[in-house]
Image (cartoon, rainbow, N blue to C red; front, side, top):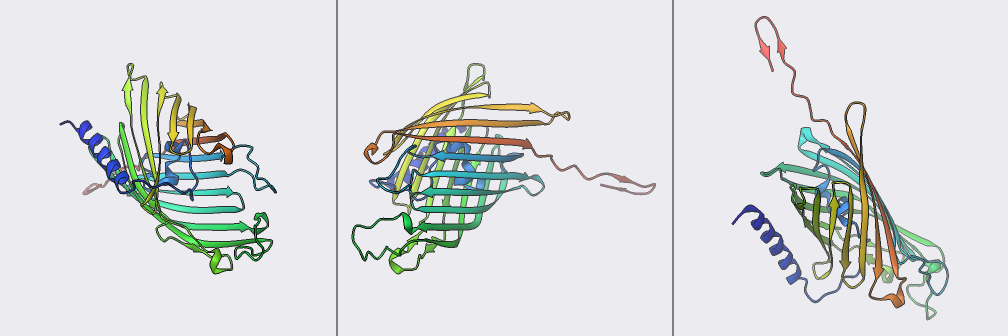
Length: 335
């Protein structure tokens, strides 16, 4: 049995166990979702930061159920913005990164800032096994002026105005990648922070969210074409899950397009391009632009039919540390 077959079977086994213990449950969204998840891996798993000898910048803008309007007021459709940065620290076999999230969902606004650290172990076949942790803050705000109650005296009715809670937040993950294969597992909100908005009846818990992500790169056509099947399993409290799966095909390492499907919601189209340029010192800078279009299949009566997502990425290489200089004297030589 060759190594390729072993890796595929390991990935399939992990997926089977994950789904077996999660069977017959649906997923209630608490964290934001992203169609281009393979271009936003840092959000899901802290172990990916610095796993390549690059400094990376990324931005995501997602508007869900575009043009959705509630039956009253202006709560509007969900929208999310993410900024992330990470860089390799080759002298320490490590990486470090930060990401910022602004997530609007009706009367609720979530803002988080996370610092991630990962330690990388070089493996055979140009593979890297990474272990990561993250720590940060999570701020949840409710605008009670945007809520309407059917009955007077409802315990959730705290009057007009906004209430905010700021709590610490932690996560951890493991990630493996080589030129052909990647797979990672992470758990966020490990401490399950509890938010209190002035009353015991308005408490909310930030439940643990786990993610299993993987994909495989198939090269063909004199290696000008690359097909990448991809999968993301999102899980809340290890008993409620949702799947996102599909494939992206890339030509000449520049142009790509794909299709995916999110269970119980949408079919999705992904397109994008990668651009590169050389500086005067022959340093290659890369830029990525991506767009995805989601067509809502289930629940259209309560949503608008489409969601849209834009991603931007920029990478520059990280210089490897120079070897120690040699010092020579008439009697001694020091390395």
